[in-house]
Amino acid sequence: MEHPADKKQLDAPNRALQIPEILFTICAFLGRRHCVNLLYVSRHAYAMATIVVWADVDIKAVLLTIPGATVVNKADSEFGSEQVLTLPSVPDLDRFHYYASNVKTLRSAGLYVIRFPSDPNAPQPRLPQLQRIMTSIVFPNSPQHISWISQFLHPGLLALEIYSVGANPSQAKLASTPWTDQATTFQLIGEIAEKCPRLESLHIYPSGLGQISIETGSELYGKIGTLARLRSFSFSGSVVHPTLIQVLSKLSSLETLAFRTDQQEQWVPVGAAGVLPDDAFPSLRHLTLYRVSESDVSHLWRTPQILRQLDTIEVVFGDHQEEPLMDDAQRSGVVLRSLADHSPHIQRLTVLPRGYRGECSISDLAIRSFERTPLKYLRLGSIEFDLAADSADEPWLKFLSAVPHLEELHIEREGLLAQTVFWIASMLPKLRLLTFKSIFESVILNQDHLLESADFAHDQGAGFPLSKQ
Image 1 (cartoon, helix red, strand yellow):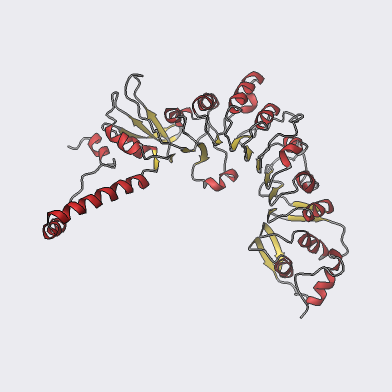
Image 2 (cartoon, helix red, strand yellow; image 1 turned 60 degrees about the vertical axis):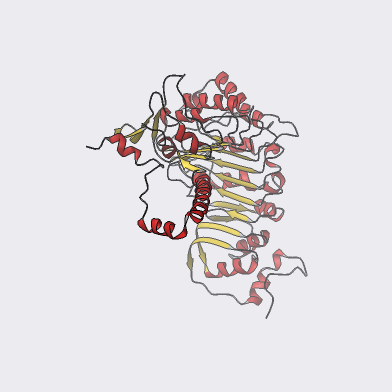
């Protein structure tokens, strides 16, 4: 009867290959010299393929190169279906080392509990060329599902990123937040600060941040502040603590900053970020706030050092079931009313006042801000105009004339009249992508009427995108 361990070894990359008889016939025909050349080329081709194939692998695949490593599925685990990977007490790492030198990105696509040799003197699997660890979290507060990361921390690591299972990393900021066990995460951050001085990207979300003491928080934020090369940082937004903002403001390489929370974490407003020096956040270009508290958003918007050089802003307020502290218009106003004053270089803007509900209120102040910014990407979900207008058409014409450089407009919850679609196509000559919910029939005005309607938005002689026929 086949032993389970033998079956698991079949999953390992070093499998026995059955050579077709035709290859023996070809070798006999070619002769010895040609066969030697063929083997030489094949060997180098295999080595090159190994470098490519093993550059980006799942942790299960790389650990199963160790003889005697086993995998047991635990479908009845409190966290669902887990896979427990157990290594021998004294592992033979020869085959592991052959492939380990090629691993640059290590992924964890499942719920893995990894049991490494308990004897500190036993050989331990390491990945000396590893640059990036990407893991996915299904259930919150599961310490064993991230504790294995400590095994592979080393000075050359450049990125540690944790996402929600099934989420596209590029869209994960709009997915459920992948909470991790608080104590395990704090310990992990401490080890990262000690072992990974070259780290450039850290996406990690400790749970229950609102319940930690000031002393614990200050110690944690101080460790994050030692990562001098950090370029991208995503963290729990349940508390945007002034101490953390102060620490991050000193990181000269920080380009991308994101705070996010969701329904699993309660907002804990803390207070203003305080006075920052004029040279704070010298490289910051991208800011994402996902379900961060309204008060924290307001405080951050009164901190000009954070906003002044941004070219990308994403603000997604919570989709409240209870009565919100602010209505949609107030939330929109926090971001839009003085956008040009705060972020004159903004090119990409997302404002969703109530998650995937609610409407983004466009006021006269917002229009004046749009006119003074080089916006190319705009996502508002749905629009409600709060403008002084003489006709029902005028708000749309004002809005479109204020954003002539738009290349993408996303109003995916907005139903548009055919006339409005015509205006969008006519007044935004650089537009490449438009998303909206539905379209309704309407009478298309002739261009002469359209030109007359647009006169309010242009000085004499300023050209309108359409020319008279």
